[in-house]
Every structure is written in structure tokens, then in C-alpha cells.
Image 1 (cartoon, rainbow, N blue to C red):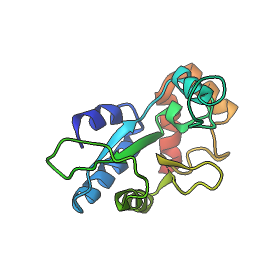
Image 2: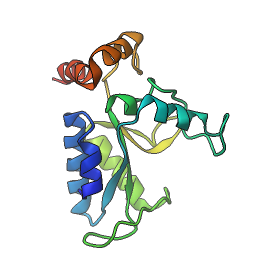
Image 3: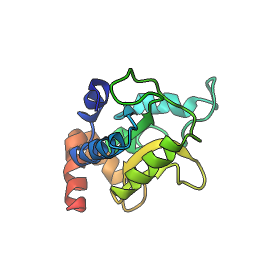
Length: 164
């Protein structure tokens, strides 16, 4: 993974970072280079994204307010493939019809990651998250309280125990 991706992976759950690195390694063997383009988001950053297409210019890109997204807890990343192959400058390919996107989704799923590309109601193609982190499907009020009281590590400890 490139330096930009590694910097972003430092702020997510280590088990997620490990799976994303494995996904990148597997895809690199096929000549597909990916980058982590988004990882941990503050609640304010999430609220700003939620406002897009609602109270701010732009198209709607999320249905999650701050505190509702796996990104807010370091449990999700967004990835994109490059138009260029290994050893060349990274140039993101945002054409989701490109076969490299389908391979990225398939490899991510093979590693136990949930991909927003498969969601029925709101597709979020670049999004990968760990499944089973929250039994309710999204952070509960109790999880939000744990996060507010103890930060990311408190949530990560609980998630890590559930993944063991």
C-alpha cells in the first residue's frame, strides 16, 4: 500500500487495516493497484457529508449523520482502484463499471468485508467495513456513549472481542 493509504490505515481498527492490506496485496498480484481514499471521519466531517444534497450543494453521498457511520468509529474505509498499474503514479479510476471495481469488491468480500456496492437501498461502491461489529447494524446509543467516554480504543476493544 502507498504512504497515503498507510497513513489512513493507522486510524482504523487494526483487524480492518490488516484485511485491507491483504486485499491490496491480492489485487496487486492481478495488476490492480488500490488506495484507501477515506478512513476515520470525525462526526463533524460526517455531518458535513450528510448535509450534501440536503442543506449544502452537491449530491447525496451518505444516509448517515455523525455517530451513525462505521467511519466514525474507525471500522470502515473507502477504496478506489487506479487507472495505472503497479509502479506508476496513482490515478483514481472512478468508473465503477471498470472490471477492477468488481474485482476489488469480490476480493474484499472474500476477506469478510461488507461492501457498500452490494447494498440494496443506498449503494456506496468504494465503502468496505467489517461485518458483525454492531448487532443492531449500526452503532447503538450505548456504543456511542462508550465512544464519547473512552474514545476509539474502547469501541475497538469491544469490537475486537466480538470478532475473536
